[in-house]
Length: 169
Image 1 (cartoon, rainbow, N blue to C red):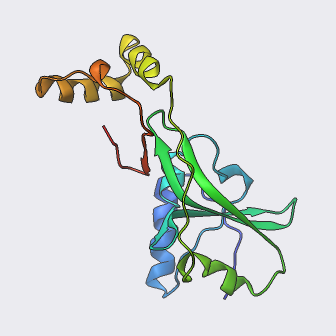
Image 2 (cartoon, helix red, strand yellow; image 1 turned 90 degrees about the vertical axis):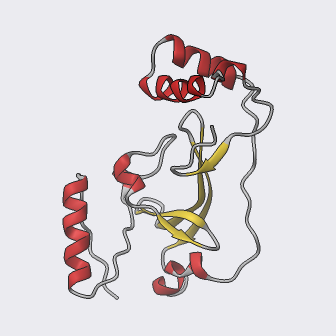
């Protein structure tokens, strides 16, 4: 197995590189450097670097050269504000064989869960988004109006997080 340090800054370039590797028979696994580490919200480029396994759901690999660790962020979910929530596991460099570490998302393991948090200020957040005409929220409000409903009449007494790309409203 070979690991190469490659810098990708655009979706177009990412697609080209991935397809080129696959044409030559390589399995592509991206390990992200510091510029692409997950923060509070996920970018479109980062969404295209996320993988999926039955055991870990959506997951993402990060390399931290300062602390000499490989990070696995798994069970990645997004709340209605666009904030991401995930579990994080750190593996020190040199601990076992790298290929075994990279298989971690596919190993049989105990069921993992992420903490569910009820956002008590979600209704106010949505109210502000509609007041300031956020295109995303106006489009969603339009769908509710077409059904004779209103986003502002919903109750938000439970946690509203979902796997990436799945909107619970």
